[in-house]
Each structure stands twice: as structure tokens, then as C-alpha cells.
Amino acid sequence: MVDDVTRKTLGSIPLLRTKAGPRDKEAWVTRLKEEYQALIKYVQNNKDADNDWFRLESNKEGTRWFGKCWYIQDLLKYEFDVEFDIPVTYPATAPEITLPELDGKTAKMYRGGRICLTDHFKPLWARNVPKFGIAHAMALGLGPWLAVEIPDMIHRGVVVYNNKNA
Amino acid sequence: MSLEELQLKIKALEEELRQAKHGGAAPRQKITHMSGEVVDTNPYSRLMALKRMGIVEDYEKIRTHTVAVVGVGGVGSVTAEMLTRCGIGKLLLFDYDKVELANMNRLFFQPHQAGLSKVEAAANTLHFINPDVTFESHNYNITTVDNFDHFIDRIKCGSLTGGPVDLVLSCVDNYEARMAVNRACNELGQSWFESGVAENAVSGHIQFLIPGESACFDCAPPLVVASQIDERTLKREGVCAASLPTTMGIVAGLLVQNVLKFLLNFGEVSYYLGYNALLDFFPAMSVKPNPQCEDSWCRRRQAEYAAKKASEPKIEKQEVKEEEVVHEDNEWGICLVDEATPEEASSSACASVPSLVQGITVAYERPAPVDEATSKVVDDADDTSLDDLMAQMKAL
Picture 1: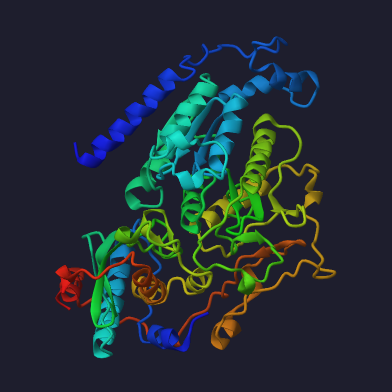
Picture 2 (picture 1 turned 120 degrees about the vertical axis):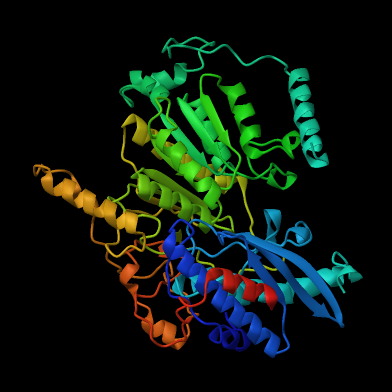
């Protein structure tokens, strides 16, 4: 179930219009521009709301994405690498967001550090093809996942503060 | 070589050494001709007996067939073993995972194989079981752009004769990979089987997909066996998926049974067969393709099939299979997920949902195609180049 805060966040991310995947040549370039526009707007929104929590960039083709996400608890910033590939069936299927360094530290993860999303993510995504993009996947998938899993991992001591990123 | 590569190499060598020590025996000699002779030394005698009993007309034909198994996990590995023991001509194996100790609650793999790639470990074991089978293994993720074209090529040219494989079997554990197999098979006009086991381990299904002729995987939301468990009471804390060797073995058995029926032309092939483990209930149905399928290749295959049908002389074929489904009651609790916002709900329609039999439901509801004019949409970005946008993103 999507809570009101998430719904509000989602509502402020521009929707995409081009249904194209990485094998669609020109249409993909159009889609990629839309992805970047939506992401830029989302990051800007986050900054404005003092809730900046990730950065992403892609390879030239826009098929591989990588960056950082972070979570703040008790004034300490816990930062993680995030990466994913755009599947050939995108945007019919969402990207599988991966946090490689947390692989094996939580059961809420599939092999290789792919985060385990709730039962609600996929139906919601499927209902919003092609309007949802990477920004929506971050807001709906990774954001809530971090908010639940990171405090738990900190509590269990499997994630410890490392000030190299401070 | 990196440290990691060296460690893998050591593991592989250790595995070789272990195999050389234990049993050590080389696999048996290849057999050029399948014989029906009933002697203890003939690995095919019980299979060839199917001919004598009149079940299968020409069992040896199995040696000419090639099957691709995508996903060599709990279902795929057992599927591959069954086909190997049946003497299939060639198997193509696709998987990007490694064997882990966490897999040991399922069949086929053994603890000493932990760390090896699933396709390599499987091909080794299977070759030992039946050296007459040709194996081709690919250790990669089929859903990425780089690998998908190669995957398509192997489906198209991977058979014993360099032509298309006879069947693709999807034994994967996620929607993305199923959709990738679906896309490939629709593009190629390749018949395939989908299989799956629910994440709660107490239901599963197989589905036969002939592009244009039966529903493709994208024609409707995924069909699943109604679990009779309220999803909201399903405890998911701290786990992603449960699994049982029983359910996986049963689904693999149902899958290969139907593969054999298709390849060797006996019995009737099921289009959709579900398995509800809690009730030992097996709902079955067939599903017509959706004329508004999202996949353009599916629509193209449907048109081709319709044209082919129209050009065929009308022979009274046994088309009675497609019985109209009547929902007399709702004993199995078919219901749709109620999590749509009101506006989502109002735009939802059952347009894409096929008529379902008792015990089968859709994983979720899809909206009817609508022209949205409500929410904000990204501006046309024609004036800003992609490079500029990338730079802008980086500068944030």
C-alpha cells in the first residue's frame, strides 16, 4: 500500500510518455531524455524539501545506471553504491535496483544485492506503464526499502558508520 | 588474473579433483543408436518400452530434439535432469547465478558444487548422467541489452542442425526474465513453456505459449493459482521467498511431462495447468491471445495466425476445448487486489483479463488503456540535448 507521503512525492515527479526500451533506437533516446528530466526534477524536489537522498548517472546509452544513495540516522550519513541495468523489456518491467555492498546482510534482498520490493510495487508499476520511470522506481522502490532496512541493519550492527564519506 | 578469478579457478580445479577421486569412473561410452533391447546395461530400455506399450510411436525421435532451459534453479535443474535422462538430443542452459548452500533445500545440486556457476555445475553432472546429450551452457543474464541479442541468436540457431530449438522452457524466478523470454519468443515465433512456483512455495503452474495462437505472457497480468491465503496475512518479514523441493519437483515433473507430450506427439498438451499444494487441486484452462496485447510482436503473430487459419481449408478440428467458463460460485476466492486509488480504480477495467476457471486468478489488475491528460507529464525535451541533461544531472 502506498502511503500518503509517498503518494505526494510520486505526484510531484513528472510522468513519462514515450513507451520505448533500450532496443528501440531513436524512441529510446527520447525516453532517455524524459528519464533525465524526471530525475532532475525529482532530485531538485528532494533538495528543496531538504530530503536529498541519491544521485544517479548512466552510461552513454542509458542502459546501465550507477550512483550513490544515502540514509541519515542520528546525524550520521550512511552511504551506499547503487546500480542497475535497464532490462530489454523496460518499461514494461521495472529496473532491478541493486545495492551490491549490502548483499548477504539482509534477507530482504535477492542474490547480488537486488532489493526485494513489496508485493505492491510490481502491480503499481504495471498499472503505470509507460508513465513511471527510473525516478518513480527510486521513490517507490528504493526509498521505502532504505527507510525500513537500513535502521534494522544499523541496529543489528551489520551496517556501521564509516566516516570516509563524511 | 584477479584474486577472485584465481579463487574461482581453484574451486573449479578442486571440483575436478573431487570428481576424479570419487567414483572417478569416466562417463559411460556414447551410444549411437537407441535400442529397445531389455538388458540391464541399456539405459534406454524402459523408455523404448513406451513404444512397445503403444504410448509413444517413435521414441528415438527425442534424440533429434533441442530444448533451451532458461533458469537452472529449483525447477530448471530438475527439468534438465529429466530431459537428460530421457535422452533429449541437445540442451541449452542459461543462468547467471552460482550454486549456493541456500539452494540445498531443492533437488539436483550438491553442497560440494557451491560457488560454481549453475550452468557449468549442471552441465558437468548431466554429462555424467547421459553423455549422449549435447550441452551448451551460457552463464549470463538474458535481460540485459548486451546478452539479449545473443540469447535470441541461440534460440534461433541453437538446435542440433543449426536451426531454431524445438522448445524454450522458462524456469526463472522473476517477472523481468519471463518478460524477456516472452519478448524473444514472440519475435522469433518460438513456442515455449512458462513455469513458476509461488514465493510462498505452496502453489505453482505451467503454461504453454504458441505466439499468435495462445495468449503470450504479456497478453494479461500473470495467471497464478489462487492461494486462498490472504496476502495481507502472509508474513513476509525478513524473507523474500520460501521454497520446497516437493513443489519444485512437482512443477518440473508437470513441465517435462508436457514437453515430452509435445515433442513425441502423444496425449494432450496443457495450455495452463496450476497446482494448489494446500488442496492438491490442479486447475487447467486455455487462454486466447489478447488482440490489444502490449507486445507488438504478439499482435503481429496473432495476425499471421489468423491469416493462416483463414487460408486453411475448413477441416472439422476438435476445437471443443475452448469451453465457455461460467463462474457459478467463487469457492476459490478469486478477487482483485484492492489497492488502487479511486482514480486508478475508475480507470481499471477487466478488458485484459481472460475468463478464468476456478482456482486461477491474475496476479494483479491492469488498467484499460486510457489517454491520460490528468497528471503532469515531462516537457518535450527537444530543445535540450541528452548530453545537456546528463550534464545537468551530474551538476546537481
